[in-house]
Length: 414
Image (cartoon, rainbow, N blue to C red):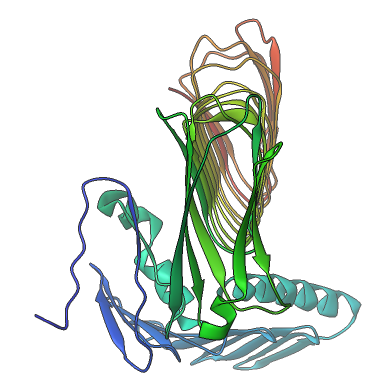
């Protein structure tokens, strides 16, 4: 079928689809059908729900419950057969059968205003771009773990591109720094004693494309920069860089694009926004910062600090985690070995930690409106209540402090 695209992969794969504008697309999931274009996105589920996204607003219709929920930057509005509920910065209004309540005083406006801020912040992740909504549906995490495919739809419409490639021979003891304005950075090591810089420069405007340049300064330190010749340039650059195994990475910075580092070393500061950070098989020390994006690391040797928001943190075989901070998302840790103190903070997100039974840790955990569960580990000197836990495993040499709100904490044996 010439109108159908099929994608499959045995390995974890990222695929970017640049789709023509002015066309409506269909995507079928096991329990839902997605239809989207540059102007709207509509998701119909098998249990009778329709989710419609347009101009940064969500409308959810449920046939089963005969209910309509509208979520916008102004607040949340719920309409069903019994009446309606409005939540906004003006307060909370309940207009149901035989009941009318208006909470417009200080506390009502405070609660309504808080919910509006949370709603506005969540919708800002989607913006007004319907392809973002479609991307989140297609990359649904539960089914994605089986398909092994991440799809990036980008923006619908025309795109102009040009390729960049350069080979650099590093000086002794040089360190790598990359400053990207918008776009992805992927760095991985190889066996050659040279640096291969490959980049794709993208823009929706042919004129803007000409005003995006890449600068490489290898006279002392190796610094790679994306430069815009004018302000307000519409475009982004995706880097894929191969470096010698012993080259030190110093700093990687971008925005609106993920950063991936594979099999490298260095005392790294890694910064981006609205995208994820992925690291595998790296050594050194690591300061990882993003927002509205996940942080996923594995087989890491060295002190590691992770700071994000609205994105999950997932770490496996990282012996020197020191600080983890996120919000509205879970923390999942698989730690066969711990060699220093660890502080974990999240809000509205669960914490799941898997420990080896021979770890020497002293755990202090607290949550609000959530449970704390211990599974398969023999803690001593236990002090436990509904929302707090303290206990020592083996010698208790290293302190683990955990705090979350409105969610569960679970500590289990590997």
